[in-house]
Image 1 (cartoon, rainbow, N blue to C red):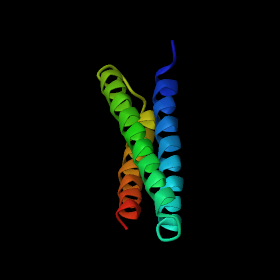
Image 2: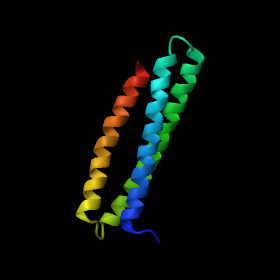
Image 3: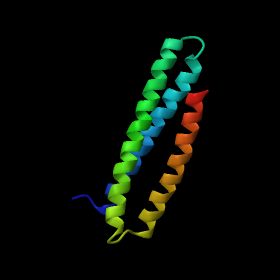
Image 4: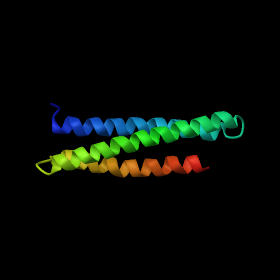
Amino acid sequence: ELSIMKKIKMYLDRIKDELHGAKNYAECYVYYKTSKPEWSRKYHDMAMQELNHAQNFKDMGTQEYEEISKTYISPECKEEWEECMWKYADKVARIKMMLEA
């Protein structure tokens, strides 16, 4: 079985990867918006899918984190999780602003 920190790290890495993809797709959405609207729509859809994946991993990670923290969680793990959740909220807001442009 994975160690507690490895489990949490796995969710954090997956969330970061999905948000990175969503940001890239959102940038393409903006770039192609006037020159190739059909491509732009596809990039918008892909960005939204990546955001959905990130939300799913966040939900699963949060559930795992809450279960683990009922017994014990190291201060380092807690700090890393909380920092990631702040960054998650900020990145999602920025990406959604790009997609509403």
